[in-house]
Image (cartoon, rainbow over all chains, first blue to last red; front, side, top):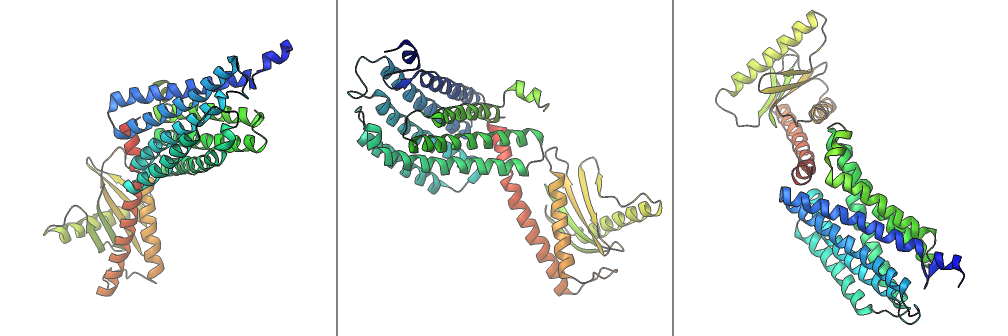
Length: 245
Length: 149
């Protein structure tokens, strides 16, 4: 293999993918740690469920990243064992659980429609996790075999995260006070950027799932989303000083 | 938190009033006194060309006012640093629009037939309920201030 090619890709995994996924996982982990510290301080249910959603999102992203690292350095070819394909199915299972926790937060703060909503989201995402588990394997076509479940999961998550974005942006529009107006706007932007992740991944899959520009744009979108999330949810003191509240 | 709503005729008579914190025996007297004083203040302000007042505060309460050609609406609230003035103004505007739309004219003297009184009561009740629902929706702010910010 040519040295230049080796630098760009090994076992079908581009080097940039090795960097970008752990970076976003760290971003989400920072959100989870921030959320956990807020929970220790405030002891409130919405904080707990939000933190749990960040924990599972970061575990999901980390799982996908770890799979890519293992495959990159693996001695066996991806045609024999595809760590990246198998771990991405685990990642989707973890994000499905994360979305349930995020919807508990959305219901507690915005919707207040009662247990039927969470039960419904729990059942739908529970089915997704169950179906992903039945398809879980590390063969080279593991991802293709589970593609219909992945698409179903992406559509459900897209709709639910858009619900968070719309609820939050509506709240920001109605608010006259500076702190909540900015906070809800950033939470809304977090929702929009996370929604963009699923749309961009869908475009990447439609183009053949070969690490197109849309794959990287999806992760950049996730990274920007986690930044907005950190400011909107955690609202650190330095940011409060910056916006003078 | 809204304590009372008054619809006041041009000459200061309470056309309709509702005390949300519970009415007592002196409610009518107090409402008449209140609307009379508000009307007197407005008259004085007009006399000295200072324009209509639309907001007063006391040590414990805020009074929001909106005046039309035929009548005025007054809201009394307890002072609250989180109170949303725009939301109060929106409620008054909605009440005024609905009354103006349903009544050709409000008698200057302020005495209405029972049927008309009931219609005004319905308007105020419905707008107040709608406003309270919107205010409840705003509780997302309270929850996040409590849970995160």
